Image 1 (cartoon, rainbow, N blue to C red):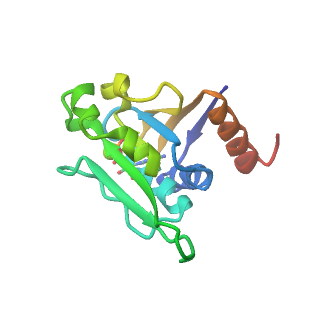
Image 2 (tube, helix red, strand yellow):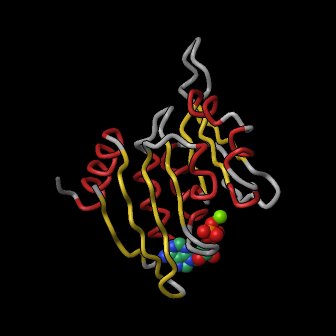
Length: 166
Ligand code: ADP
Ligand code: MG
């Protein structure tokens, strides 16, 4: 239910994110833990690219939620799909997160949360948790933990895509 690996460059972190992003569906939740500079936003850049975002990722200093869009091939009657990126760094706690209508976001798209530990009680229990840690200038330690069967599937699929096994 858990997978640890060392990323040796920002590009490698983005590539890992791309594999995850390709797996996301509305309702999915990815919780990112780790200090400033541990690579959370870099991972989100990959996630959003792999998901197929038309929009660039920014590290939101003032913006708390970023919304990325992707085309669905312009099929009649289908709405544009969305990926939500919440940076909880500046939130005072779960109550403030709850006021953002996270449930509504999860109905409309997938949600990736930086500093998820700060707003944990406002988030569903089931998620893919990714704990990131600074090792040295170029290296980051990533521990992916599946919380719930949907995320066990996601982690298996991630492992299969990255390592070509499973
Ligand atoms: P956070 O969102 O956790 O504060 P960022 O992704 O904004 O972190 O910043 C991470 C910084 O560390 C970036 O400047 C990035 O280029 C650098 N970095 C160096 N090595 C890595 C790596 N292996 N993975 C991710 N980022 C890395
Ligand atoms: Mg960040």
